[in-house]
Length: 197
Image 1: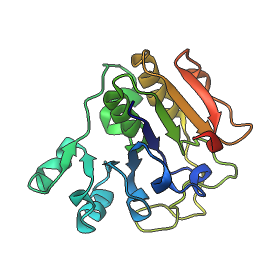
Image 2: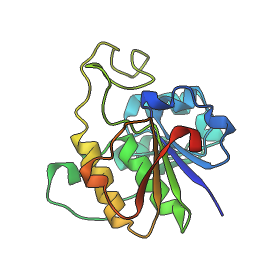
Image 3: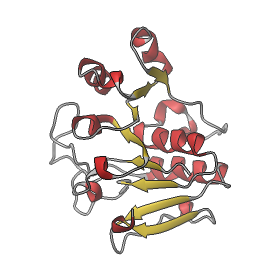
Image 4: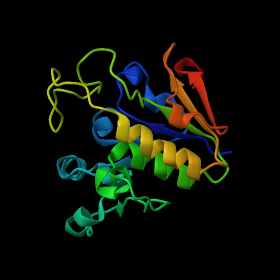
């Protein structure tokens, strides 16, 4: 059975050789600088431009927002991110407030078709007061000394996906003592160590 791995850019994954993992891989933004993955989410224009200029779309499918797709529609393997599978009335339900991470989980859920989805690098919280991202301080990212991002939208959005795709099993791989958010505490979600990937 197909194994699916969705990869965020949280610092918990910094020592993992993603290329060595035998999964269908879905990643976000600047992961293109380090690893070869199958599906790349770039919803922000600078990251999409970086992906196209580096020819990453020649060997991976790259997904972006509909309003950016028009400019790149003639490029190989550029697609529009999937529509949200639900309609909500909260600010985080508006697709414009969805980032690459939640869209990567959505794509993984849509591709799963009975396979378990493994989730890596979705740290949510910082272990310091600064931003938690392996690419902080590099092109198209905030400086390393910027304040940590409030993860409320990510928690809410991914929690909605876990609820909607209730028949899909998700395994969140994280460091010791990391806690699942309450919104993710569902029967189809389990927590495991990174070493068990």
